[in-house]
Length: 241
Picture 1 (cartoon, rainbow, N blue to C red):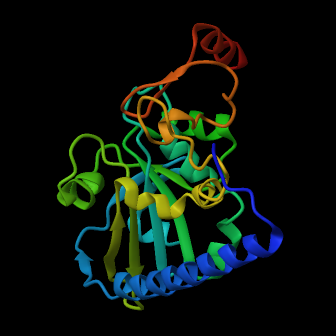
Picture 2 (cartoon, rainbow, N blue to C red; picture 1 turned 120 degrees about the vertical axis):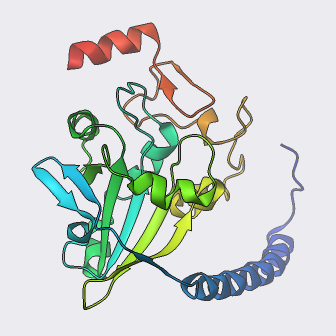
């Protein structure tokens, strides 16, 4: 990496000039937030029934007494043994935020098409404590996400609002790079000298992100984002179970 080496006063001058651009970008993002919240809403006509670790859970119940619900669709299909690195990285960000979100009238839940037993095995293995339910057998993902015109496996974020009468509305959705807004690690990496350092075959987080308990174990990531453990790592994981 080639960079100009300057005196402290010269650096402060350059940093101050950049600060003006950063403030302008922040004001633009504030305005974007206003427009995002101003999107029209869609009334949800079906109170979708999911399967939770303790039995059936409706969409309405996922609000857990809150008026706002943020859902993450995790790419975990029935029988899928390889873990999606992007989905794993995103939900890892939530661990320390649950109480803060709940206290601000926001419930959080993860949804996946896999049966609840397979979901629970991964959730417990990773130590995740957020609500995670199975959409196996209902049309939630098809109705909410595939209607967005998404090819292949959807893995998006959706926001819902429930009014005082119990009516539920779909208010916002984000997919693909739109989900980067929920990856706080990127804000740090973007400021590091090496940036995102995504110079591998995929030019995305799949070049470097791994399930957090599998860094340093070898393995590769498939183009669809699924982590393929090395033979030895696979053996170690089997023994750990």
